[in-house]
Image 1: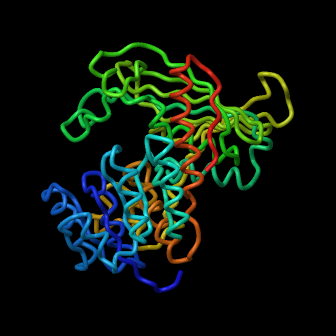
Image 2 (image 1 turned 45 degrees about the horizontal axis):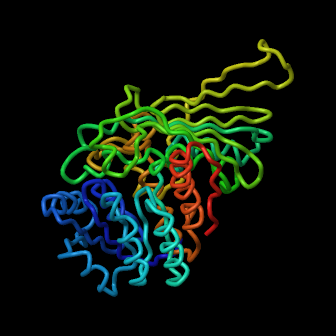
Image 3 (image 1 turned 30 degrees about the horizontal axis):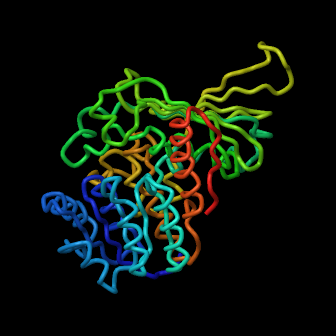
Length: 384
């Protein structure tokens, strides 16, 4: 990587406070600018960044960031309803944009974002944590080495009750009643990578009932939705999502079923479980292998490796704990996401999770909810 230095702005310093110090420590970042309507959030992020650089400041407003010609890129970490608006404004201001999931909550806004990327010539990256969690980095190696053989079927699950706590505050109330499939990227994106193909059609059924006040927020009657999808290359997959009033353990999982090996991942498991059949075709011929997947700090710049473990940014002895300490938030994905975004800009290439891939997985969820509202009609996912 060359010695070019970037100025990065992070807007939304609730969740964004997790990313700001990573940018502050990145060898190709010169300055970090912080933006939040809540000064306490911005101040907290500033103190975390100061551990790594004194070139961090708090901006007066988002518009001030957009008008600042020295800002190269913006990372949007605000609430879901603002994602599309802030992304489009960032791109139209001639700046690269990374954004938390989902990309948008309407097909119209997805198209506007894709158009803004094309017109601006700037990079877009959806910061989908699942694709850079330590576990999926292991799965990527299996895919690269063709260990699965032919991929035959895929399945994903994201069950998480979002009725209370951090999901139902004055600033996060938008979660209440949200159609389940609008926030499906954690369960869907690994399947799209494994399939190596975009989704082209979807059938979805809604299930259950929930409180009327939640229904009124979006006109969505379903706390749970389950979809079957058809990829362009002919593969199929099933994806299930539960959001409200469903008593279920949080689960973000995905299964990849291949002709040689198959693979099962469950959220917060310490291991991957593989099962495979090399020669036999009966139950006795299948074996289960428990694989302890490694922390892939080795593929990051040394300055970012500390962010792969819990409290690594505070621990002076972090280097000796990389292989033993618990992983940081979202299974150590955050430094990998930041590094990919910065690297794509420095190297003048598309991001690994670019606007086309992001548009397809986001549109799949929106079309799935449309199908559920039409009692399971087949809905074609638009191309962008």
